[in-house]
Length: 103
Image (cartoon, rainbow, N blue to C red; front, side, top):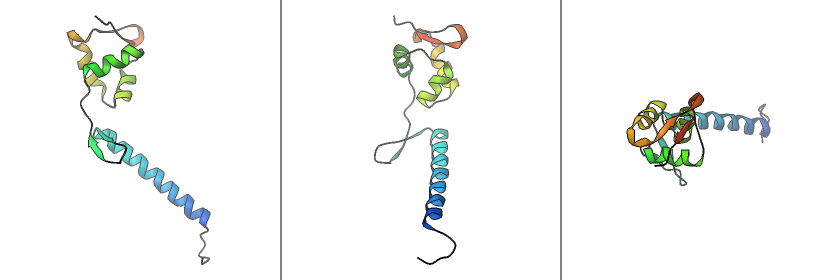
């Protein structure tokens, strides 16, 4: 290898830094455009969040709107609309904790 001022350690560090940057950009775009990446690397549109998705999580544990938005990769306004439905059986308790009252 010619000695042009770069050693293998520097080259590897440079590529790792670029990989980290590109991974962060891809993840940001994936979330912004509501996309998912499957096991094979295919990028597909995310399916719509349903009331059942929210109830399933709340059946396992309590959460706040912001928690659910992160878990379900959606925005809080969509979740607020689902929770406001009369058939949701979800109540907002102290400090914004949500609870599903299974009928």
